Length: 440
Length: 91
Image 1 (cartoon, chains in turn green, red):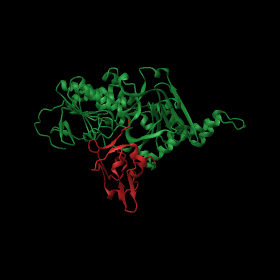
Image 2 (cartoon, chains in turn yellow, purple):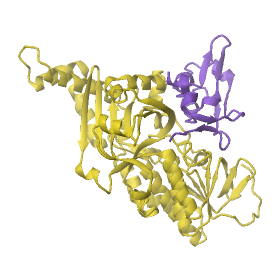
Image 3 (cartoon, helix red, strand yellow):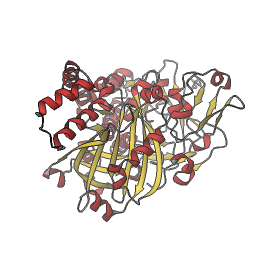
Image 4 (cartoon, helix red, strand yellow):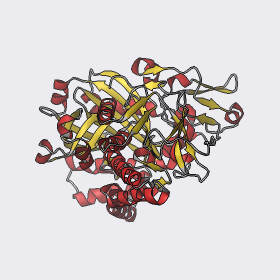
């Protein structure tokens, strides 16, 4: 840590926001709208150039608060009308699809987005509101004063030290700034998942035909049991002209199984169910990123004197097996951090006690409430049986129900009992079911 | 394999200064070498003949998997210089 001069000249910015993803751009936009001078730093050549997510942004009131008319203005791809889940067994697949009429009209429950486009657009909104965006700049360190209070950041290049009474770190899942600040504990494999994604150009009409969609309807599709015993899942998301196909793999499980993510991905893409949807499609991009998957227990204290953290940097991301949220939590936390900063600047007090109200705001919001509601989910999702035994078991039971072989059929209950005998005890199944129900 | 055509699928502005360093002494005695299979860009390969870990920072997708899965504490990893590294283009 470089020692700052004892009496610094007054800071040129009210706040420095590190990272122009959805959290950082939201924080900068919120502050700039109310007249604060904000510097938004981005390590990529453009905002969004390091973002690989092609997934779903759930409906999020923060978006509308930041950009009135957001859902008409923002560059999203398709509105999601169908959520599907397939259980992949040995030689079987069992798919559940949920559709709701209400998903097909605004306000949409969720839209698919391309982050490189979306992030650039959101950062532009921040700039239009008066924020200064500096791209191609990495914030390496926090600048602290003698009282251990964060007073700015140290960046590569000619800018050197940039001082501000408030720093908002939105530097992503591997937030080295939050780690340096002592907020995030050392990153570890048991709380992280690796996402790998292949992007296919399929074409707008062909996507509609293959996925049974019309207009700009979209779908999300998750797969359980397709990860070769590694805890995790597969996914397909429809964008306007492209389809994202990929896997999310628990890092500790991948590590202990000794499998390569791109090999599991290639075999996932070759499964008949997936291959049929992507037949003849052109592979146009491949990407990888980590996700914080430790749930609410991974969320650290979110502020200290002069500093707040938001989005993935604060591990605000969760899945309960059915839903995956992150981007809406990032935008909401960015907005709340921005509002806290404005209030603190207004009273000329950006100390730890003042910024701690950000922690309280998040606890009162849906962000940490939802994460607390699903607080047991990460533990439940460490159950290996979810990823192999149960998808196979479901397939075996249904296969015997649907197949005819000329012999008298046993009852469904008898089939289930017989299949369960081979695959695990009934008490264990009951316990797993109970844990599953409790977790969500 | 998808990683064999990585440079056709992703744009990079390569930083001549590697943003990854490995401690070969630690790699030599590492039992699992998880980096060699877990890295999604296949940047790491154990070279049996030379008894060392070959790695190429140029293809790095900047996910940080290697940093986390390394059991020997041999990986030093930071973000590439501003504007350098992977650039998702299409999107």
